[in-house]
Image (cartoon, rainbow, N blue to C red; front, side, top):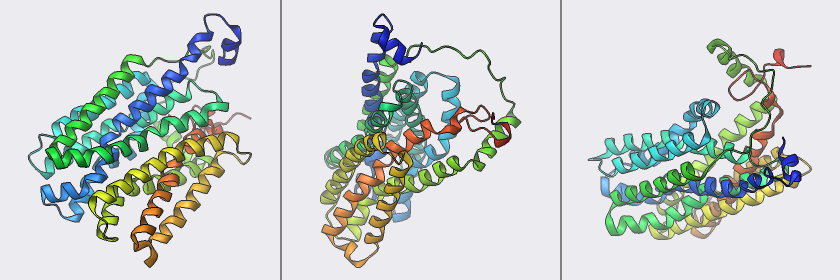
Length: 370
């Protein structure tokens, strides 16, 4: 029974679909909780550099460590989500984030803290795709972009809250307390998701199922997806824009403090404003993509043009002025974070997902049905 049929039936199958709004709420909270410290560590750059006596290179590696692993971990996360329920993949991943942050608070020095943050990134790599899958499975195409935008807004929302709270915690109790705070918040997200999430009502199981692919066939599936035009667009735009998103989260405070001579506290507030703009961007741009006659990818292209323009301004002498630089970072927050809502909805709905040849569903051209 499809969702629309279940909603029209008005019997026991009607109520379960109303649960999608609860699913959206807990997925958004879990995203914000798991990404709380990961998104807010950029605001701690000045505190960490002073407390641990770090060079600029060491600091850059430290604040980006938790965001490096998810870029590669998405592949493993996709495999896990194909085999296990989102409840356990997301919940355990958020739990790993919490435990790793707790361990990091006991780190005796830079190297141990760096390793702990790499483990944080490993756990966090399952939360993003798992949460997206949980929401996409509950919402149809007419609402999926808007729902994805709300869910994805959890990342900049959590980061904005962390950027406002963690510097205060660091000043009052030290940098170790910031990791404990982040770990506690991530643990709340893990517990809520595992306790409250459930899958949507079961749909009919296809009768003609493909046999499990061999490892060699899976490798061919991964390679052949590179020949799909839609897959190329997805990967190139995603790689470009995720770089901007990470750069805004990591470098805003450092750039404003060192280049524009803005105080650390004021720079952190600009980062909060930038991430708040990202919350609005993820919701507004995703909702726009639901109604755009040009399709969702057109909105992604708008974001790419907007962030390119913003980065160009930062490279000019005017971009060093505190007011101009602050405004540009808010602009980059709106588009540099906001792109993900329409982008992930485009990935979810793209035609290549119908094929069985790879873990992501990309069929090789030679295996596509006529």
